Image (cartoon, rainbow, N blue to C red; front, side, top):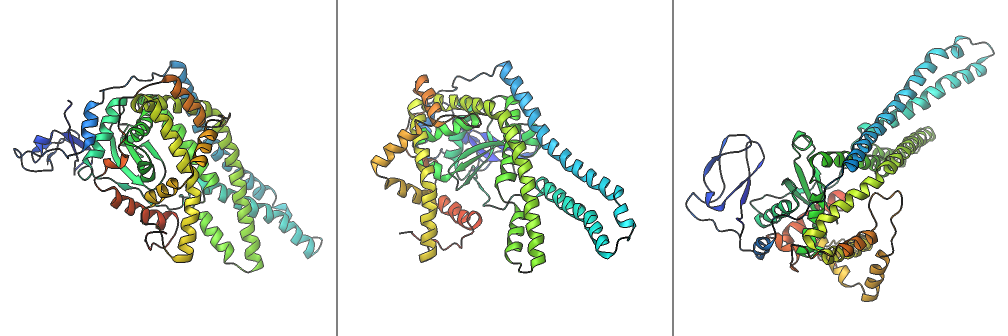
Amino acid sequence: MEAVYERCECPLCGNFIEYPPDSAGATVDCPHCRQPIQLPGPALGEASPPPASPVLDILARMGSRVPGSPLSLFYQAGLLLTAGLMVLLPCLYVFMVLGIGLGLYYYAVNFTFLLASASGGPWIYLLKAALYFGPLAGGAMAVLFMIKPLFARPSRGAQPLAINPGAEPVLYSFISKICQSVGAPQPRRIEIDCRLNASARLAPDLSGIVGGSLILNLGLPLVAGLTLQEFGGVVAHEFGHFTQGFAMRLCSLIGRVNRWFTRVVDDRDEWDLWLAEAQAGENSTFASILFTCMVMAVGLSRLVLKFLGHLGRAASCFLSRQMEFDADHYQIQVAGSGAFESAAQRINLLLCLLRPAYENLEQIHRTKGLLAPNFPEYLLQIAATVPEADRLQLENIIGLQPTRWFNTHPSAADRIRRSRRDAQPGCLASDLPATVLFSNFDALARQVTALHYQDDLGLKVNLAAAA
């Protein structure tokens, strides 16, 4: 049986430290900053038993390491070329903005002759002034709103909650074991939110770029909807992206640029929200024309970004799909082919129910002023009411979905077929709900639900059981 280690965060440098339970309360030197700190827990010599949880017994029965998925030299070269292209595309956009700016400068300097003479009368002079200042004003507005995506921050949403290792030792032990199994670095921080998703990413500071420090984000609706075995496979998939040091940085770069293009094209940032509010609250004709021109300038910038985003997607879609298949390998090895398929079907069902769930919540909030206090639980309640015939129809549909040329992810059907072909039993076996990883899942779910309603949906929080 492998030893179970406790984890704590160094109060000086913020890095995590692993230590055996019998060292709790001792003063040691942090292996990262080399400063003396006291480990949390009882004084040295007083035994601190690990938390009583069936998860620890399940982890003890897991193997130490699953077979890896080595990357070929050709694949890594493709990653390098694609990453270079993805960096080039935003630079190309910047050069386009600079080119338009230089064109405006050339026009402003070389077309002053339009204003040099007032011959022809005042109306002719006004026409020439319009020909001079009109393109300058329109071009300046276009440049301004083409620069906007480079600096405008995304609209604010609910910030994920960071989980304290001392408060959730079972969760951290579980994640640590999954990382050991796939050969990925331990996450520096685990965050939770109310999305139906899980993701791992490099930390946005130097510790992530240089040291490969990771942050794991867990959506509680996903945790609530899966078994421990299925959830362990999903986590293994996310960390499977980070098993190769060089490749993981290239993959992260490609993903970040793709997500940036998606955000600036599809999402509305703070400038867009301000412009929409100003346009809706303005009644004068001149101001309406001005705001309409601004909206057209925003549309032009988005059209250019959409074109460049499609170029980036076309260049990276094949490699992106291959990355997902490589990460699926770790999910299948950890959870097994059967749990891989059941997790895909369960997630697909919950995704199909998300929109009806939000529409129902909105109606209840509008008519009764109430909101479900625990959104993950509410989503599962809706899933439990789906007739078996409809459930089977959704499972049949997911098996017929093709993978298209410009898809960044393989279709669920292709991924399930590959998992069936591998026919792996997995090293993690448990039909316990994944919520057993948390000491008080309901309290955390209620907390992130309130933040989700308030910050993501803009609803006034008055939580009560939704009928």
